[in-house]
Length: 524
Image (tube, rainbow, N blue to C red; front, side):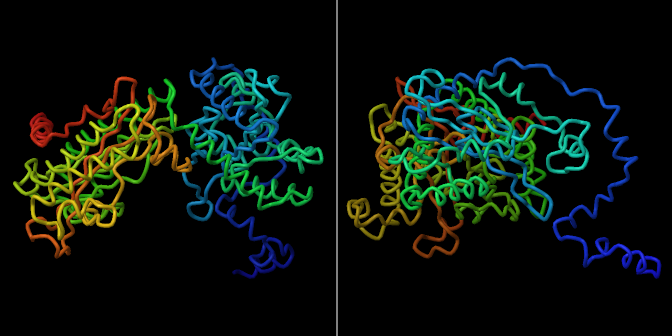
């Protein structure tokens, strides 16, 4: 520090490293002018923000029906469903914003709208609420500050100068057919008349661990009004469960979103095959694959639905291989598990296992066919009225039969399939199916009797994804199997007439896979 700088710091200690509050130091990089002249100049000469009122979005009526279903479930109780805040990735840099799926499902807001927003369903007399329900719904959010305010240019997290335009309260209310209010009014909305129902207070149910500020607000209110926190936590858990179960059956709009996500994902797989010749030449070919799919996801959708698994060779035997640091070698397999998330936040989840050089070897084809047969058995078992768990049983039975025929089981087939055996699960340790929707593993908080033991019903969307994984270090199998990992995963819509494979456009028969890859390369 020069002599002049030292003197300046002494005159104004808040400008010194020791005197500057820690919370202000992220702004050091901005070097923003603070003069009155600058502030006055920034406050004027801006075109007015658009006041165009959008048409009601197609999702609005569907979201209203979802809110009515939750209202019917919890009459007389205040329901608080936060979107969630930004999440810090590094210092003052946030992850790309995504609201909680429960919030998005009830409001219809997707993309990166309204961080910190909270949906409150206020109890009213039965039958007098929205759509004849038991509640009126209000969306509380931070409206974008006017262009004549300092926040417009000074707030890098919320200011329009930094992040662009957002819809106004009037515009969101028109788009979603949902009442809106300023986030500053949220505390009163949550805490007014709250307390123990037996003495006239309003009980609150909160979707917890989404927004810690909302958690603190509700918990403080409960403490101040004598509510039993342990019992209240149990009430909150039931709300989370109900919001998850609400997504078990997809409505017509949701199915359209799933179809769009699947179509974009299929295009992403085409892009990967197109990129394979370059990926083979790169020391981290898996990253080339990952990048090719990600580019397509961002072009056609909102983002990835989950981290892409681009696993080649022995990496394909690691179930959640997302490092994607390996190379691709001719003669090996590439297990690609990837999904595009649509702008509505619905995601696909598809897996194909591709021969890197376009041709399966004899042993690869043998393992692949066994997995394909298992997938087909699962699909055949997925019929309306049957139990969700039957899909898994049908698929793994076929896998066990193949392992037995190959001489890999250490016991008889009957012993392996018995509950006390399960030896075949060494090579297929995961479940065969999961529900799919806004979350890649959707409806995860649903009760067991509605999920694993649930009845397959029209409108359900789920995966069928058997696999076999023979690790290079697995001495329980002959050497020819080692280092081979195969998974085939499709996205299934249950209809009244039976299952429909939404991802059928992506080849899955080994001959068809080879022809498809050759066709893409032949057209380059």
